[in-house]
Image 1 (tube, helix red, strand yellow):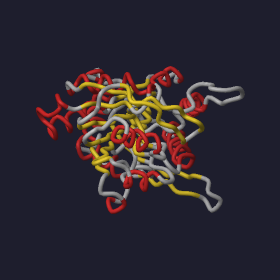
Image 2 (cartoon, helix red, strand yellow):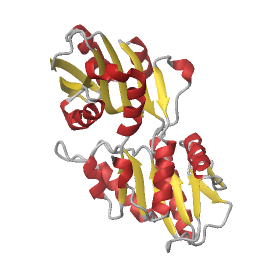
Image 3 (cartoon, one colour):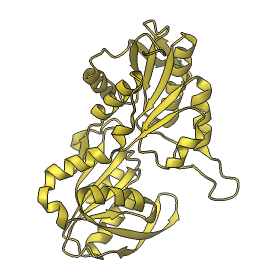
Image 4 (spheres, one colour):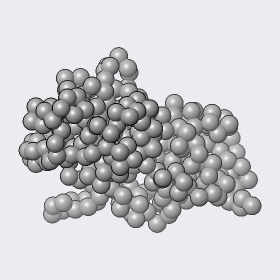
Length: 319
């Protein structure tokens, strides 16, 4: 028996309405009627146009650029649902912003990920559903349940179909030491060998590639990361794989397409043949880059939402 709410309702902020509509279509329900706007001074305001009293509410909102506006939209919508007596509120955050400051790396640093976790909880969320957190320990920053899905299965299915038996001859490459465990799990599922790009970061959003750990000479390589922001790390790694390692070709994939500043230009000028992203952040105009491809996570989130509503284990989606 489902005791938390009489029915399921899904609402969306402005960050990724396309993904929200795709999720609702797969579930077989209509996207909830609401409007998120701004006052003249930029303050966020929310209007919910249907009753949510006693309902199991899912709010879909990536905290991507403009990060602060989208985060406030999520908080304001959560507060509106709570005050409207929703039975349970799940914040569905395909891309969780502020995740990179998950610890103090130098004196007087904030831990912004913990602050945002506190804000979401204080606003009234009862649980969080997200995908590929930048740091897994962020789950522990919340005092409410957190389901952190993995984008691996989507990429594994895509590349298994794309390359077939050729996968065994390819190399998965981690763009830095911090992504090794994520890349290793991905490589094992595709039965590929693995290499690592050893780099030394001089300052934020800048890096210097130092060495390639592993033999990529004459191989088709697949760079694997969790997110691409300015694309400096990814494109430098791709260049090093070809120029230093002697790779035959470079493909790349990452869960979150943040794509700030010069990212698009760097990707277009890089030796990367194709760069696949998940649509956790609203896709860019295809005309900006012929190299970028998006894979949808709507089926994964639709199934997770249905499982949460029906009180069925979500762990099946982590395999």
